[in-house]
Length: 257
Image 1 (spheres, rainbow, N blue to C red):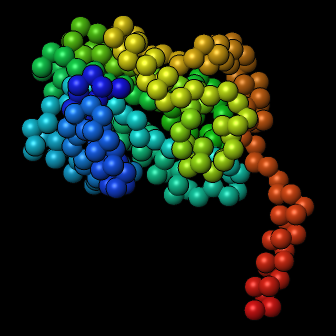
Image 2 (image 1 turned 135 degrees about the vertical axis):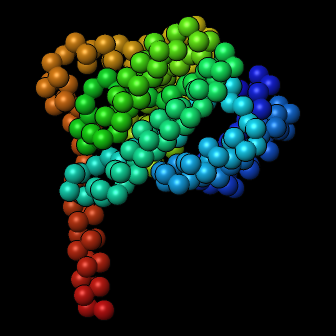
Image 3 (image 1 turned 90 degrees about the vertical axis):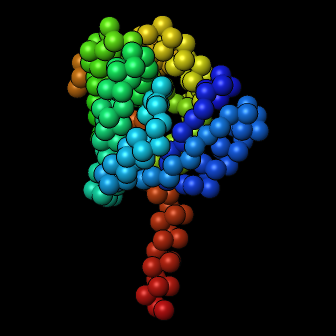
């Protein structure tokens, strides 16, 4: 949608082939020029290099969209600490570092905007994805505070809080099939809401009225109740009898081999 508005884009992610494909598609559809920068935002060195590249190339960022992020979901005993720390590096450290480095230039120019992707999960603790929900609470509070600080500078900040959205998010989080269980929105619907409320200079927006009502409900409920109720959404499913038998057979075959 940004390309459709004539904006030239800087696309940043780890997978160069997908970035190039997206850049070509946007150019074909909208005539937009996109610059591709390949970086792993979970790595501090890569983030520093990215900031240096932006300054060296004289790229003035008018709208920063901190969209990178992922979740680690599941049984506490099976989670890898490294995965959780990588998630925090992307969801919190990368978002904060890019914002802190680029917003001063926006202030100097007297205009600019930041969209930080939070989540409806930012409003409550969520069992089995505790660190993810906590990281999104950080994004929400950080963004609201920045919005207040920058109120009279010509720069605005929006925390976008979507609910379930039809992306690869749940496959990456290793909860496939989740999109089939609950109502969801398309990325296009979420982006339209974000741009609408960015223009209104709101500090945050929850995408979808059902998600908005949910965000209110969990704030009204006792925190203990909200935390306990969250367990039913991402509680790991025990393996079926068939799966257990299959695993036992594989173990036996491995031992015999």
